[in-house]
Amino acid sequence: MVIDKPGYEHLIQFLAENLSLFEQAGTPRSDNKSVGEFLEECIAEQIIQLCTQHTELEMNHRSVIIREVDGIMYDFQEVLSSVLEHPITEEQAEIISEVALLIKNLFDNAVADLFD
Image 1 (cartoon, rainbow, N blue to C red):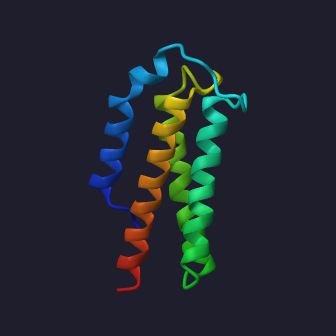
Image 2 (cartoon, one colour):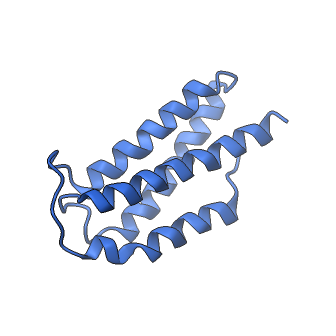
């Protein structure tokens, strides 16, 4: 299983276009999570939901998904490396939540292609 490369590149571009939002100081959310913590949690939640929704996935498919998500997380952490430890703001959380949903959509499409 391979996710759509143009789709993935679009995600990186979307994050890069919104990078200025992460460079600005803002009011931290009340949960006191860092940008890195929130990123990991959002993406993990979406991948868990993906695997729950697609009961036809075998263990080897899930392993491939986890490896690909690890690569995506590495890339995102590189892009956001200077702010990973900063407290997350509501605006940053919205962007990260949107990116996590887009990642899930990429994998939903890859799973659909796998079983077509």
